[in-house]
Figure (tube, rainbow, N blue to C red):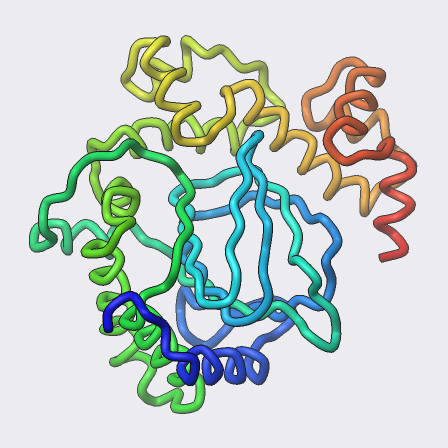
Length: 293
């Protein structure tokens, strides 16, 4: 029955991910990543458009003040670059969290929109979760199986990717996925601003300029930006600044003021205060801890 997840499929997917997962997540299939996580400490990252199928364990993700939970048998979809935090619940060396990710590419989604059935617009959230259908799980499993027959990958991997995208476009999250492939969607317009902030996070930010870049009025832009990211443009920029600072501090733990200035903070006290508010510890102490992990 569509929507129910056969446990033998989930079990096989779990076993194959455990065998093929690498520390850098990469695989021989373009756009496919496999993860095996043995810790439950908080992590901070910048997402990309991605479909995740969870095979074992559970994860709790935070975007702004909204919480997303997903576990074995669930899928997770993110449609744009977002500064998120989260942790794998109860992951350990004995019972690692196992999952697979597939990059969601606009150029692969757009052609399918001509054949996909119309859907009712429900807004444009950037994140969606829910149970993985049996059809999605089956296609995901076949994609991972290709890792054991490399000669088949160039021919079959694009076909399975297309099938997965079709299942998404005809499933309960169709409206979210459609936004990636539509050139004139509110997501595509807001994405211009998101990419500018991501690439220029240390620069001063003017919402009016971002609205112009997105082709919207300032009021409409602010509404759509918050609706998609659950953050204001300034909050979004701050998250990226602080996450980039954390990465830099792992390599330069003694240059706290320099790192703060590099990511856009003219005031060391403001940098220390906002860093501690997000990560729970001052930058110096956090940098020392990161060096020992």
